[in-house]
Image (tube, rainbow, N blue to C red):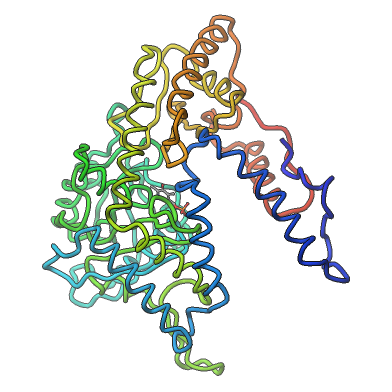
Length: 473
Ligand SMILES: *Cc1c(COP(=O)(O)O)cnc(C)c1O
């Protein structure tokens, strides 16, 4: 499919139109694109991304959003409602993460623009705290480093890149997909600001040994961030339902911050996440202020300047609309659907699930290239995510998969796909989707870099620039 399917159907705007168009015409054009694009995931065949998928809920969120969309929450004197929304979102998220158990700090939090936003602010907070903190044994850290398990989200690499923090990556165990706390400890030195564990990681849906990492953090006097961007709003309910979810929240000694995305299983609009701290000293360390500016005294509690009140209102609305019972009910359906889908995978001896995953799982094959399975699933309308080292495909189960018939369809389509893969493998055929998703042999070649730059440029430019995908096939 072209990246520019609308170029033939609607005007391409390369300049501001000289005169405006009617509202009806503009809305009709938007409606056409939105409804066609929604059909793609409404089948339930798309992994992750549409966490709610419930148009009635989206209407509710959009109504909440619309009342405050135009409000700039940086100017709190004009919108005390934003203070209510943000404070209550943080309080409810802290409660979910059992901040009530904290005795060695004053829990606090902030609402950010998404998972990457929470992670960026967390790394900034640790860097600033470690640089400023006068009482800490790490006072005045000038060459900060941060330690992550390889499976942790690239947002950590991005944050460290942006903030001038050295990132140390620890490999994970191939079978369990989990990090060895001793290997993390071995990377910690006197310039380490924090370590991290995921609950759960995006690739495999597995939960790092947070309790043991907490011991490392306490022994070495460093922070421990728990990346609950994906799991934060669903794992606590999975645990309540009796699923095997090891402790990962503030009850675990040594956990100093947690990110939990409201725009994933919190079922809010895209553009929101929570970042929670065991102690407000971390959060407060990253505040920015420029009191001497000629334009007036400036301060911002996070990296963004102006922010929309609509996103705070919608997130607050989602949380109070559902409450614990609502989140629990959806978690029950999602975990049950994930169990059924994992059972479908396990029914094929050629397939192997990686580690002990939760509502999100990944599988590979030792019998054939798993991308042969992905090719066939794609031809049947499925959109699973490709992984590498080893090649694998993953599915984050969301509410659209819990609809009647979707798990049955997965079972049937997966069986067909396994047959397809066996035949293709026997015939010596390569996988098509492997070229896009599969491990890039030899790392980042010039050819691959050119391709990646072109793909990103296509997201931003009005003209096609993507060259053919580079090998290996
Ligand atoms: C999605 C995700 C992130 C990043 O979140 P964005 O909202 O995409 O910026 C970080 N960590 C994990 C585990 C995630 O699943």
